[in-house]
Image (cartoon, rainbow, N blue to C red):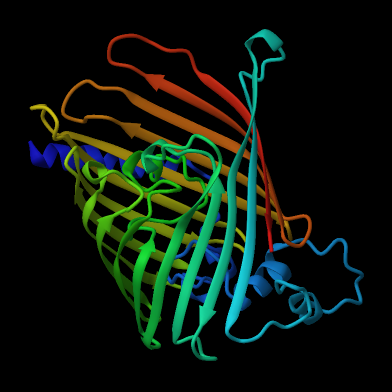
Length: 392
């Protein structure tokens, strides 16, 4: 029986890998940057960019259409700081981020069946402080201003500030990093789509950070990180997920990495076990493919129901058309319980990811969601959405 489940899962993994014929956009591996520590203060990705990351965004990722041909790339890089060319003291690096989402459901030109919505997805202020010029001792902080999130258990329904990240980073040497505080849990591939099946659905959403400790070993061909966490203090005690996770990647050859992740956590209400495998491959410059497949076991501890063992898969491809302009495609699948007939969902998104100006990101996407229900059918869900992301 176990062997049958393994074969089923492997078949699903290879099916998703070969269904997507295009390329994905994973952490700039298409630009030969395979390690997140190159551009981010958090060596596992996500969060604020360091000085090198800002310069890379300006000189390799963003279109240079607004600059005259005589403008050197070094000068464009020098303009990427928080205050442009003006240098800040070595001990402080601030940052601002805004991301908004415009969404139209059922874009079939029938006003009665269409719904328009706008969401402020991200309003972040980063403040990063350093005790030495080499940034061996660092304090990394992010404060967010957003609406009420149910899983953060806020009593005030109005917009409010809260701590999204707040951790100390210590660099023992070039291969060993230690993080202590509030941060994202170690697991899988970190990417900006917090509603994806390999993020929100498995307790790794936009605001699912947790207090904990991370030990990160990084070498030229492999990375390993382990994370012990005790939950988010903004949650009620009975909802705090406490546990352990680990993730690792190995570079098979240039611009190609494979990895695996494990997470186990439990609150008074739920227990989660996660196991995932990942693949990141850079193709031509700026183009790459990213994939994650995993098992998710969820147990409701408030009743006597059995654990549900489900699957999830996520493949994202990005094709670079020219500097600053890309085609983006994402294919996702999830099944609630592989041991019996249960709901399945498949989602396909296609559109453009553009960086037309410095500090600006624009996305336009069509998304089709198919529902396969155990008891009855459900019509496909179509959405058209656009995003604007401004960062300083």
